[in-house]
Length: 219
Length: 263
Image: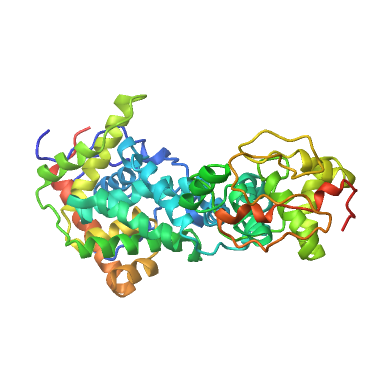
């Protein structure tokens, strides 16, 4: 693979996009942010707090991949370790947690971010190296190898291209579009005003658009 | 509106454009959005692609951490009654927890040992010495009694009989009711509790058919402190909670053979 970022056309045509998700209460048009727990979150949380492993497993499966992808950008050398340590902290405080799904994710990402800061954040600035590193960690399942390989490569490419952004811009974009947090929550997590968060996000998106535009796209 | 080709150049909005807000909010762009933003939207969609195997590989260790945190004894929420659907899902776990709580509350560590609810090292000791059930890794001795009471048809039966007999001498009517209710259900009626308990095997030994003596027969593993049956209904000593003194807590009122009064 060349140093250029390649995005394959296995994405659904955007005009007919219909990614399923309960959307966490977001309005139409069809969102591109999955929010897979939605209405059942409160019941799942209560069950997990009462000791149900099955409920906790659902909560974990919903957010751990998201956490990992965030950490691959912000702390690529230690993503799995930081994620595991974050969960250890979270299960200890689980019974004291009160909040909706957004607050739950905010808690998780706040904890992960602090741990990443503690261990010293290192971010690769070389797209080739980071792409290879990320691609090695994302292995497709075997049932639909071709399709899923495309998906995982696309995810790896997306992570690589976001990794090129300045730290704050990358973080803010990920917390908004990957973790699904609103501006207020993101502002609290990164310790900036909402206005600063919005500016950083917009700058990051603009830079992304320019990068993708510059490096070209092959279908 | 024309469909912009994928490779359209330029048309990247300035910072602050509402199209960015739409992207950040996770909303689909309208068809007349510039090509540059379409690519950004594709990146966002790729970030949200379904998880791959490696991203779910750590589930087992996460569940281990979850179980370990549960055993550390933090108080549980009392919100279960607001979710009746979940009660059936959790009933198995609750029965174990309630058995532990009731056993500890009603009969001291002795009954707790017999329902297998002591912490693992103590349970193993009880298992080795007196034949109590061996340590179960998922037992949760958290005292979160819900009033349900232990299931008397299972291994908790002996502990219940023990505890119930102790309660008849020392306990309140309410405490008797909890233990008695499930015993009566398991025995098939209030009048049959005595006979039921007489037949309940001491865990680790074979059942005895003699209701007039120690209801568990004569387990050879017990130390020599086994009391003989006494009609007074009072145990010789109050249970101290140590496994080595367990035999002193054996019920003595059951051998009378009379139907017990319902609470």
